[in-house]
Every structure is written in structure tokens, then in C-alpha cells.
Length: 217
Image 1: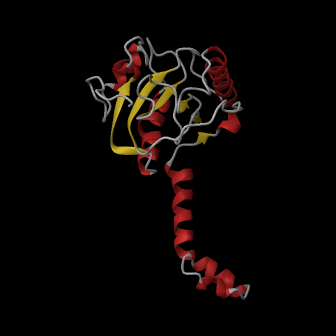
Image 2: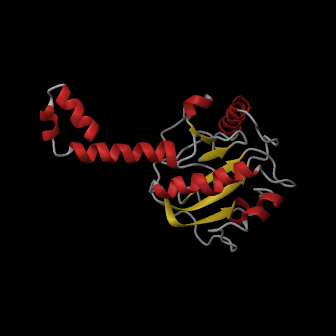
Image 3: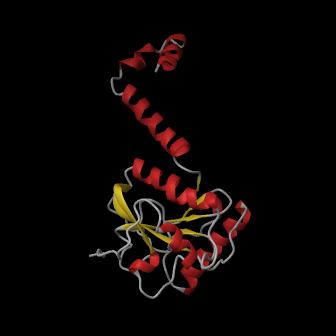
């Protein structure tokens, strides 16, 4: 505000400062900027990884959500180590979900690569198709790779466990007392997120050992 006041003085436009809502707008804008570009991990938007158009009307979520369901992609089975490879993997998963499974879009809310980035799937605000019976009450986040026998990279785990989660809580998208679940705990026909990765998430704060009693209405 001090900088703006100086600019207005030099430009002889001090009348702008008479707008009493301007200070709040600047403060709110700065907080939004800091949250997105400092507090949150770098999230690659759909347009940047080459997503196709959503095939119907997205359904808004009622925020904040109470759960985060952890997945591995299984296929692609190998971690992606570069932006170009992770982007190709995202396009391949979206193509499979839309053309083979006949879903409107890629199912996951977000996908974590081993290149240091988080990739936007359905995003913060729209209903995903990642955890049957639970899509409206939690986000589905997957790490690219098959983690039946091995763990994701420590950096990929930290992106999901700490940075993305803190971003979600601070942004009012995920409740502060949220619960982590492995996909297998709420859907009985899958071993996702893999034996090795599931053993890892059982040690996380906010993890719930018992199966989720809640389902969508």
C-alpha cells in the first residue's frame, strides 16, 4: 500500500486511495498470490499437460472435504522423471478413462509425478471418479507408478503428504481434521495403492487404520 500511495502521488491520482475497499482488495490479492505460489506446490494445470476437454458438465464439490484417498496408478507402472514423460502419462490415463471406461475425464483429483510436480486432474472444485462410493466426500490423489513392491520417491511422497495437503487445508478445500485412507480400505476389489506404499501411509499423521464408515449419499 505504501508503494501504491507513492505511485498515486507521482501520477497525481491520489483520489484512488479514497476507495476504502482498495486496501482490503490488495491484502486479499496478496494472500491469494502467496498461497498459490509460495504455500502450495507447483501444480501443472490441465492446459499445460495437454488435457482434452471434459466430456460433460463438471459437478461442483461441497467444500471442505473430509477425506483424502491415496492411490497409485499401477499403469503407467514406472515413475515419471520429467515433465514431458509425466505429461504423456497424464494424457494416456485421461485417454484410457474417457475412451475405455467411458468416464467424462481423468478420474483423479490430482496426480503426483516423480519430476517434482503435481498435475491437475479434476482439481479442487469438481467431483472426481477415483474412489467408488466416496468421490463426493474426498479427493483422490495418485502417484504415477506401481508401488506394490517399492516405494515412490521420498520427494513425491512429501509432495502428497505434506505440501499438497497443507495447501488444501490452508485454502479451505480440505478440513483441518481430515483423514487419509488407502484406496483399498474403502473399495474391496483393489490392492491400490500397492502393498509397499500402503505400509508407508499407515505411519502418516491423519491416517485412519479402520475402513471408512462413510459413503456418498
